[in-house]
Image 1 (cartoon, helix red, strand yellow):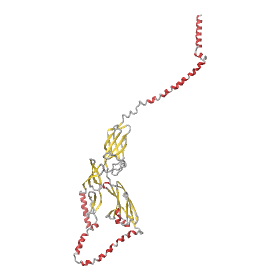
Image 2: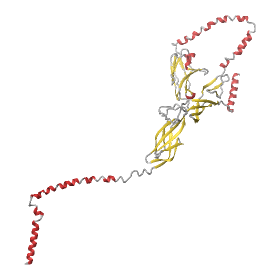
Image 3: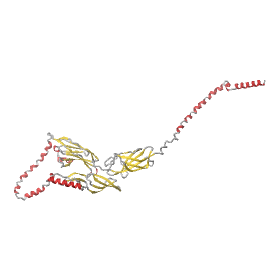
Image 4: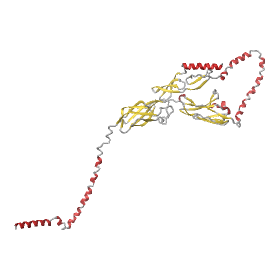
Length: 441
């Protein structure tokens, strides 16, 4: 009986649990239908979606990997080599010289020129005959620096340099004296054949030239005159010289055939360079007669021949006194003789303070020209530079002082004129003199 009662109680407990369970209560009231209102809770889940935005945090991970780590250990450059394509020359544009870095792991930044007072020369200016300071700045490539004790070489020669505090830049410096070049001819005049009475033009060009004149040379080479004097020898002709490269000769006469014309370029410090002579070739033109008509006008001079009619008076001079008087006239006659003799010019240069030439015993000069001086600065003191010059043709030497401030000559002191003296040259003179005497015999 007791066992039966305990079983009933157990069954009743189980039934009560079933009746009061949430599943059974879900059907009771619609209030519990509001449970779907709790569905917004999942909407709160998107609010948590910013959490994924925290994923950029991994981008912060590069921060611990410092890229500048290699910079503390750059490679050190102990040497730099730079090439300059040309040294400054008087009249050369400052912008013409160029530099290039031939060493690896470095590049050119700038090339600048300064005068001795520290003034930078603009690129459109030209070098004068003085001394200049050049500065070349180079930069080390990324990952490299210059050693504070780095060595610099300019055109394979050691030069002064300084390195910036951070080691990224190096500055090379050197002083250059502007060279003095005689004009250098690029184009010589070319030959042309023309008709009598027409015109002809010749062209010649040169560098380092400050002016241009033209010379006429006779076929035998004995007569030389400037083109501006052409009318004295050829009255109906005239010339136009532009002073740069061209000459035009108008109304060329037949008599000019065989004459030569050459360009004469002048440069700084009295330097002179002559072009190759070109022969004037003139063909006769039978229709051109006006030019010779001017020559007969000089024939009236012989009309003074009546004077010879007075020659009978010499019949009254049977006295032999006039004869000796004529003999001294013959002694004076040798004056024109040197014009007919063959010139023998010395091989050694004769020179004075401004010009040089080859001299003949008769006093005639050959290849006379102004000195072509090449100057070198010996010292600079108190803004005054002392320079020594040597003629590149005859060897004449002189010194002068130039104001660095204004570039003008303060004092000019000739040193010496080198005109020969070696035993070989004396031998040449002796042989030349013997040849000259043999020809006179």
